[in-house]
Length: 292
Image (tube, rainbow, N blue to C red):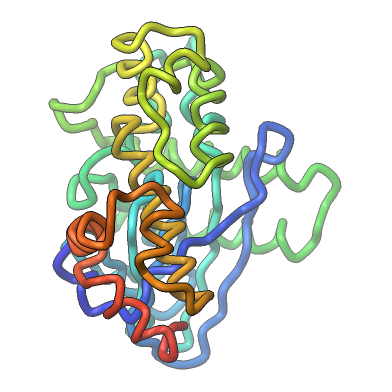
């Protein structure tokens, strides 16, 4: 993620999402230009530019978005933003992945709602010039829902999300190398997700599979289809993000942080941290005074 290497910090963000509250929305109004900021989180993210111009970064790829254009972020995917032209307003939906992974429409069996988020960033769907006005109207509807706080706000946001995805994928097809079928069994891997979030140390794949009542091979296949990456990679990203958060929040020695989150030693944490964040843990911590 070459563009991400200039980030002062990659912040791990937490959202209280669940089956009972699978989607939340918020508005951001930027009155001035902003340099690049980076974060990552478990929920999916769909954002829509209402005014101004926003620059988005993801895995070394960047793009400038104008009113009526959209960005998508996957599970635990480091990503960044900068305000290229102010004032800039955006509407953002944060989505519990199982909600989309289990969505199915009998009248459109080829509609797989997770696919746009799982495709490589440059190959994710984008809004055509002809549809920019319609997409902008959807963004304004999100803004009205959030401003009005109607009863069943989450249902309204879910309906607008589905309309947004329908419009976004109208002429888009997933890359050929992606799975053709969206999984319908998110609850099967839920215990493994809970296990990752509930402990700080590494969780063995065999133990995670057993918690779901699945064989190792079946668990590996279902987890990848549901979350979009292997269990080992997902667990590693989570532990690295916890370590990054600890580096930013505390003065605890790096050796102690490595041990706390299940890394063999300083060298092991340093190697993986450089691969993921583009800098050493010490360099990451040194920038916290400038973190957004």
